[in-house]
Structure formats: C-alpha cells, structure tokens
Length: 539
Image: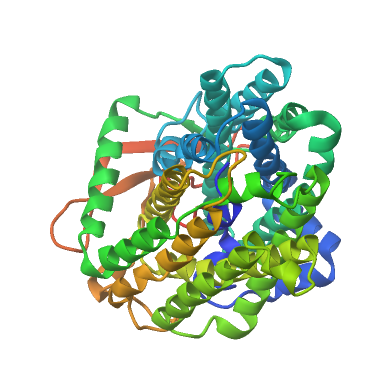
C-alpha cells in the first residue's frame, strides 16, 4: 500500500481548509462538527444516501481502516511469511504501489469510457471484485510464492486506486451540481479517511497477533466488498448515444492538454522541486521495521505495540492538520517548504537516537521514545506535506483541474516510489539485513542529510503566499469543460471541449461530433455529467 501520508492528499487538505472553489468554507461544514448526524442526513438528502455510503466505503473502510491494517499486515507478511530482506521488501513494496502512479489513466477511463451506459458503477464493481479476490487468494493459499503474492498485493492496490479515483470523479460531479455542498463533501472525505486510519492502526497489531499476517490481509476483502456494494447501490445517471469510436481521440486530446500545461515554467518548476524533494527523502522504513521487531539487537516490539506506534502516528497526522489550518496556512510556500525540509531532517535524528540507544542512556524506555518519535515525525511530515498539496491545487488550470491534479499526484507518487527504491539500495549497500543492523545508524544519518539536499532547488518554488494565484492570467480564463446545448425536446446534450497545444495556455475548441445524451434511469430527470473530473482527486 502506498505510504498513508503520501495518499492523504484528500480534499480536506488540498486548499488548507478552503472550499472547492478556493473560498472559505461554508457554515454547514462547521455545523457538521457540532451535529454530525444532522449533517449526514442533510448530505444524504441532497446528494442521495448512496453517495454518502460510497464515501464511507472508499475513504473510511478502504483507504482508512483497510490501508492502515494493510500497511502493518503487509510488513509482517514480507518479513515472516515471504522471508524477505529489508531492501527486497522495499523494492517489492514499490511494485505494489505502482498502480497509484498511473492514477490519471484510471481517471481518464472512468471519465470518458462508460460501461453499459454507466461511468462510475462498473468501476466500483471492478475495484471491489479484484480487491476482494486478491486478498482472499493470499489468505487462503498457505504456500503462495513470491511473484504470485506480489501480484496479488499489486492487484489489491490497483482496486483501491480505481475506487479512489472513481469517488473523486463523483465528488467533482457533485461539486458542480451542488456548489454549496462542496466543502461539506470535502470534510466528509477527510474525516472518514483520518478516523478510519486511526481505527485501522489501533486494531492492526491485534489482528496480526491473533490471525497472523495472512489472516489480517484476508480481512481486507471486507472493505473491497463494501466498495462493491456501493457500486451496486449507487444512484447514477445513464449515458446514451455514446460513441466509443471517439474514445481514443479524447485520450489523445487530454494527454496533449496536460503536456502543454506542463511546459509552462510556472508549472514545471515547482513540480520538479516536489519530485526531487520526495526522491531524495530516502525511505528506510523497511530497515526500521525489521529492527523494531528484532528481539536480539532491536527493542523487539510486539505486533500489538507496533499497531499502537502507527496509531499514535495517525494522531500526529491529525494534529499536523489542525496546526497547519490554525497557524501556518497563510505563510508563503518557500518558507513553509524550507522549514519543512529542515524540521524533517532534525526529527529524523530521533530515529538515530533510538537506533544508537541514546534514549536508554538518558533513562527513556524504547517504547516511550518510539511512540514520541513516530508521533512527532508524522506530524512534521504532515506539516511538510500540506503546503505541497495546496501548491499542486494552485497549479491546475480550469477545464482539466481533476485530471491534471491526478497527474501531479502521480508525479509525487513516482518520487515516493523512487525514494523507497533508493532507500532499499542504501540498506543493501550498507548490509542491513533481517538480523544485521550494525550499520543502520549510518543509513539513518545519510537519510537525514539527504533530506536537506532539495533545499538547493528551493528557488524553483514561488515565494507567493498560499492564497495567491500562481498561474499566468491567460491560463486562468474560465473556460468550461462542458457546454450545455438545448435540442428543443427538453433533453440536454453537451459537447466535450478540448484544447490544442498552441502556447502556454491550452485554448479550448468545441468538438460538435462528440455529443452524448444523459438521462436519469431512476426518475427521468436530466443531469449533467462532466466527461472530465474537473475538481479534485486524491493522491
């Protein structure tokens, strides 16, 4: 599973608590905190209860509880069942996370390729089926080899990514048709993900201890089954008169538009910094996990306590969001990223103190110091991550916001994947194995120093504050991604608007031969379904 901090690019964090349009939150979001049941009833009434169910299934069950349990269970599965070395475990984990790198492909599929007349239902069903099947295969096959196991975990990761991007498209669609509820939908997604993660990490160690790693992974079929159920129950409008012959043209034009946008210096410069900073923040969690659980040279933490450590990290993540929202969201990007990198390097020294057992020399037990270490490190990581998400949201031009945001998240996921592979290579080079941790302190020290190297490219990041507009004025021309066309019969048709590659700003032209008609299969009402996700995706 992708690093939970990497994937927590949910809508709640994208604009530092702002609404979908970048403005302040509506008062209804605050009412949701004071009266959650009334708030949920309102969302269910105005957006349909099946949408709220889909949010709980994808963000709460799949990405929240499921991802948290999966992180701990997969670590023990690699160590105790597959018997992998730390460096090999990190390499294969990068392969497992690869479906998140190609999120724009999943987004384009769900936007432009309806199946049996539906754009969302079939993809929820597909995500549920492949996720549940792959996890059941792991739990029921006691002698599953390395390659089949990695393949099954990768398929489950693909199911989670498909469900994620499909729900993103639903949120984008509802943000267009119900603008006052955009902030409420963002809050619902963020709360489900955060509290789901907290619950999942809290029970993960107990599940691994009582059922084993394979049994705990088998339980991940339950969140996938909930996603499948959400696909069955989802109220969705049916697309008719769709020409599949035009699909390849739409893919080409969307890719062309994103490529044109990336050529703008205002876009590629911060993207380059983000990629390099993630690439050089070496991920050595494989080595640290093996040391945590080693009973000879390490502290020998139990499965239950490892789950507690991760749960405290989830609390630290929530505290990071609160601290950022209350005190840091108005600072400029360059200052935030500067201090984020510096504090990340400094908090990494807590790992060094733990590995060298300096904490025991000053009278702090390993279990206390490890909890403090994880809570502080994850909180700082969240503070470092939040302005990056805001920066990415500011780089998305009108008309392709959702798809381009998915592209930016994919660039970051590539950086995280390379970070895991570079960290695995470092562990292998310094001979950190399942039972040999003599040079682990050097690995930690090198990682901490490498976190400072991206500061040499900090000039690529704009000095603007987080409320400023970053894109050139010509790119902010509010071209709509869809245009309604009345046909005189009361039904609605609209044309997909696409861009050519002239200049930095992708101009928009009307393609008259790519019209589709949208009808509601429930009550005969007519709804506008955008062919592109125009609001947000989660990283």
